Image (tube, rainbow, N blue to C red):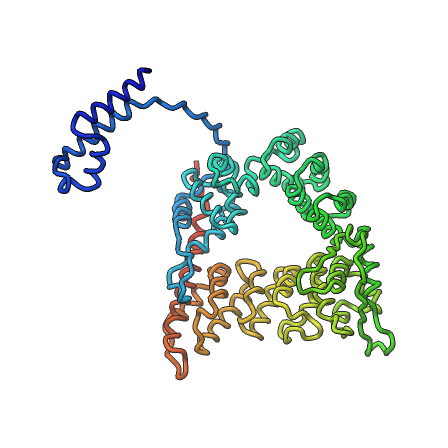
Length: 547
């Protein structure tokens, strides 16, 4: 018998013979000395427990020491100002985001909803994460996928280092965007070394950085290991070519049309169709032109579009990204037609349809109820090709009824079309739309507008909220828009909103108590705007003292 085993045995024996076993001591501690008089007074019980604990530990064989982790990488970014550090701790600790079943949210600002904005602002200013808050930041990113891009960029290389030590944070190693540990992208040896040896997250960040620096170099780097990459990794890598996409990428993407992965093929086809001069775009244009034409039986004013959808999806179409099997509820021919029109260059339709402008084409009637299918495909093509002229044509006038003059009626499509317009035009369009139609259909449209909202857009939203209040509605009917306003209104609007925080006189026929609920909602809005202003002010480094 070894010395350590003998020691343990002697300790166990002494515990058994000297006043009861360890199990009896635990039982007395759980039941209390009043119910176990033999255990003695509480102080004596604690003394006995301490003595026995030392004996038990003395009889254990020490375990081998774990391998010391490698040193955390340096983070050269500046420290957060102290006030901002405290604010981050509060935001990470807040758990008030859970929705209330009644729809009421109270008058206090929702800190959890401000965390993404704080992370974005801190990242733009180039600050580093305080080391003591890295675990809480990674926990927050694990719980909320919407936080991950900003959180991982803010966590930087130390966040990735820490994520390797905890299996619960492994998500950071697959999709991280932190760039603090990236080498100088102008150093080919350092770039190649990280590309060959780095984690997937580091390689994605590296490829993105090289692509922004020199698009051709990123494409060449990707080509060196393309055949050895996993399918899901190839998909992520080829998708990164959206940044700086140009005709020079066509040969690589044309080869990817023969990839083993269907998703990779589909993404490559989508990117090629966004290049109007590519061979794939030309092939798709020819196919779409054979399906969509102008009925010339009448005069110009009486013209209409006629459609003859494809009768088959051949192998060449499938190689160019056309998916042969439609989703449930869709007919095959309409499914194939939509994909062809979506991938065809928009610039070719004017010549095909009598030299008309985009607005004139969209206004043309379409025979045999093909209009919705054709316009939906044009919407997707417009978003893919970022064509502002076609966006304006398909959107129509913001004050007109949805779908007027052939424009789209889908909120989701309108939101995507708006994203292709310049930021100022986008905000102006939505402001006029809200003034004409109110807020009932504005939520998706507001989500694509630049933050903070322009003055005109912000005031249109507030005016519409005030109209809804005066009409006697309850504020939780507009909780989505109100939540967006808290995050997106210019903080300077708080002063103008102060007048709305008072409880208005209750009009005859109004919903009972609605005025008080609206006052509470506007109090939360004003409080949130002032909190956002304070947060941004805290992220400004203090001025350096003169020497």
